[in-house]
Image 1 (cartoon, helix red, strand yellow):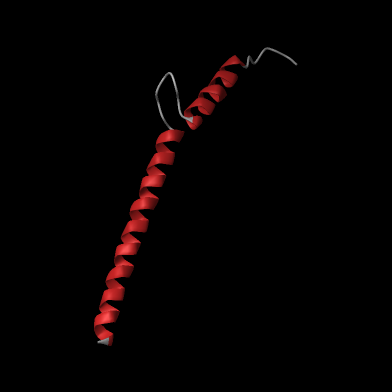
Image 2 (tube, helix red, strand yellow):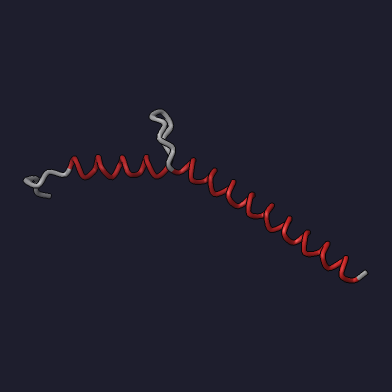
Length: 66
């Protein structure tokens, strides 16, 4: 009787682990998609900041003194 309970417990642990893994992957995919979204009208946070950095660097003129 005890071995049957132990096997059932192992199966439950595997199922719980797989469910947690699926949830973690789904959350990571959602966060990644929002951070690097390349929609021109609504870019992701990282894409938007990278564009701002490139514009700032592009506006820097070497001859211009402060």
